[in-house]
Length: 201
Image (cartoon, rainbow, N blue to C red):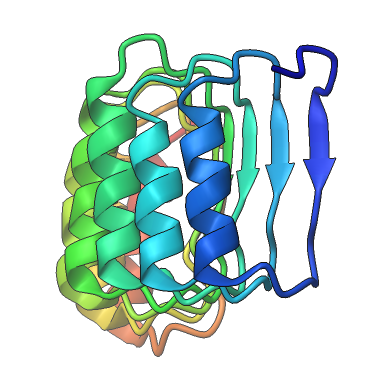
């Protein structure tokens, strides 16, 4: 077993589902890799699930980028369940940009945020988490005390999602960077965010 490699960058290749499954299997046994970038590798849902499940036991990975892979809700659920249950999880940065995650995947990530105490940066841009998933993420932010960066750019959260996040920001004083670009937020959502700024200081 290799015990010297700490960073692995395979972005913009074509390892496919089989490659994703193989790496997921390896991560269950490897305790030295700290950074893994598999951006745009066509690993699909099965590769995403395999890598997600590896996080049940992995205690070394700090940065994981699965952006531009269609892992879908199944992959997001596997990741969420794993980082929720693994008390030795070391993951600090999780990038799931453009991974076809919907509301159910967003809910799984939200449930993880309620219990995980390692994640600092979470990037979910370009998915379809919607208002329902965002409301659950907002609920998680009310109790989470470690997340500092949350990006939900282009997720169709609308006013409902913005209102939920606004309410959460009145109770969360850890989050430092919130990106809501391109989410069809109207006046009501803007008012909710504005009210949050009065309390969040």
